[in-house]
Image (cartoon, rainbow, N blue to C red):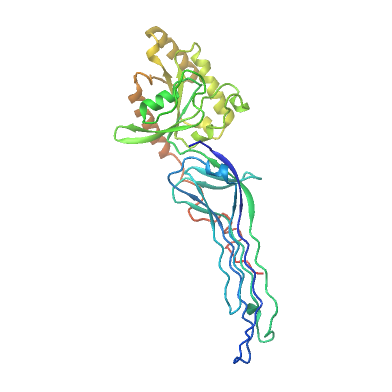
Length: 358
């Protein structure tokens, strides 16, 4: 399945049905009176977080979603049928933004969350609604309320506990394959990874999710290479694992290049806890390893872990360090402020969700 993490979609709620003008005309009823029913309510537009999806590829083939119009009222005080709702099913971690203002409408982080994006129009009143002692034969009915419409942007940010960052060919995919059952593409040329990969990593009796994103190069925030468009997938991580290729000459420059791109991107990545590891140590002799570890430590200002995804050296120790850092990061996280399940972002703007009246 092709990975797609962003889509632009048009949504429209249903119009309300029109009210009916009707009078009872029966042989043995002397004073019939008005009996026109009200129109049905238009369908709503909902977005639902479901299990089993990990991409927005469905929205490449269909970009327009319209809820059904409510049925019109009929004689004998028959109410029009309410229009059917429309549900947009998205994977966990999807954000919904207004395409014009970039306002965040919903952030779906749990399976089962439902958010009403657009409310359907209310049905119009039939002439039976207007009868009174002074107006016993009203000949008016109201049309239904029009539905709402807007363009929205769906943006997927994968839910992971830790994120892998580094230059191309730093060994990120090899490390992910070594610590999990994920099978990312691995080759000896840059940008082998073209889209994010997830793997479940076992740390003793516990597990966490590790995300591998395509490598960053100098100028990525300006669109060089694959750019920084995939960095959104590590925004939700509790910790970043920064892998540096130990076989290159200037490991300090490699580290600062990626850090510069992270800082330029923003999104809170510049403040996230970071674990730095020197990879491919099985290809270095002892003297070269000590020299490059010292250079990298001087560049990052923190301890440097030694690891090799191919031989497995230092992998288990690094996994436990990641698990400990994840626990610390999750403990200090603020409670989620996303939109609650079954919440309508339009409700409560005027104190209550008052029904429309024609």
